[in-house]
Image 1 (tube, helix red, strand yellow):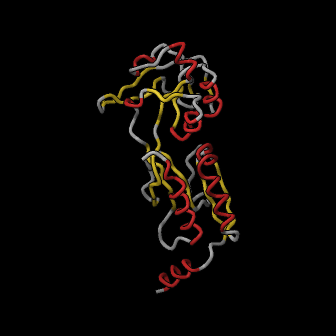
Image 2: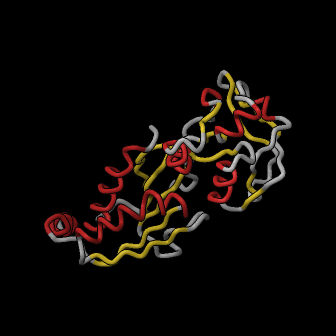
Image 3: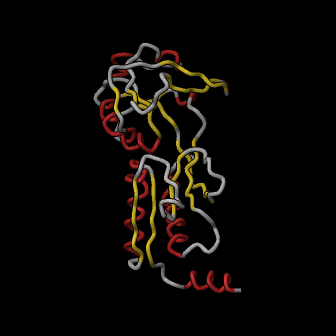
Length: 221
């Protein structure tokens, strides 16, 4: 009965208190921060602490209420709500493709100039052909440890790049980068909102989850 009364109270009260949220840096900047801004404008009694980190955050140990995870979840103790999915996409600039041609198969990337990430230790990019994994060795003369400069290098025509769909979206829309070999992409990666438990979530958390679901409808399903 106490649980039921608390749940009813949470439904009728205006959201308030502290909400701590974590998300990957670029996804947080592009997809989460705008929602948080609208959220605190609509519910001024809520204080939001936003942690944009490109590492797996332990919600319980670090005092985080809600997290965004891209990819399959490893921790079964967390509650997850899927809000969409993202693709791992290959792209290059129109100028680069005019000079070097459009690839029709992943094997054509062997020997091509590929912009890589220094944090990724394997020397290949994974594709799928007829449902089977195809690892293609790639190389290039430029590596970054951050997404944005790698995107900008590809826009400048340095070579091919591999990015998550939400990272590419504004560049594709602007005509600066062209998606390639889409039929060979790996399976869609889920995007989940995660939290330690589902019992008696504060209204601030429930409301924010619903706002994120609505805002994330443009993510690939």
